[in-house]
Length: 323
Image (cartoon, rainbow, N blue to C red; front, side, top):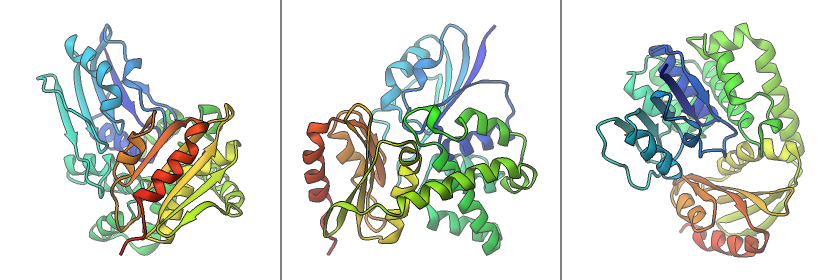
């Protein structure tokens, strides 16, 4: 018997994109996801049993071989994403909605396809992806009050925070688990009201980890760019992405790199371009092995220890103080 698969990034954007789609078009499917950094997900789909595959918020370039394999065996693929896709193949079984603009995310791409039908979930994804200005504009158009906007912003932040870690063991909830918990609710406000236990777990974990991160001081700093170093601990891996976004929001003219030590002696890197110049993060990350992402925010999954000085030099050179 043929099976449907939903393949999605484990952060707020990927989860909220899928929530919108499945609220609009319910489907029994096999879920494939992982921690936010785990994006080579499409290879987990078995083409022998796959009927159709929905792919959300994972870079096509990192999944191209698996995608080509699925298409060659007649599997229908729907692909929505905002990362650099490299080259998009032409195939009658492939439907793509890819927009790499710095002011969008996969949740907003899906929101547009659905004519804003589940706008509040789209806003959670957008806030989680640090698109505060864009999300605020859409929230205002939807007539949301300031408190509702704050609630969705906080929820998006907590949900995004939950996706970071070196493995599922670092997370408070696995992405598939939190998706299943939220899937029955047409609005995030319904979910927050009816599952305060889940929301409180996310909020309390975020607050505790943020408190530890507050004591971190710059590791390397120049005009226009700043590097921070986090220890090889679960709380640091969980907070690294949201911490990077928070640093970006503090000064829109400064680029930030948050480097987290790994148990093997290498490093995990999160790069945030300045909010006033949301370009270049993906290009910089891609010059190093295991690097990639989007223009405004990118990362390196494993930066070899001997390349740390080279990365810091390249980062500072890429983001001098804007004039």
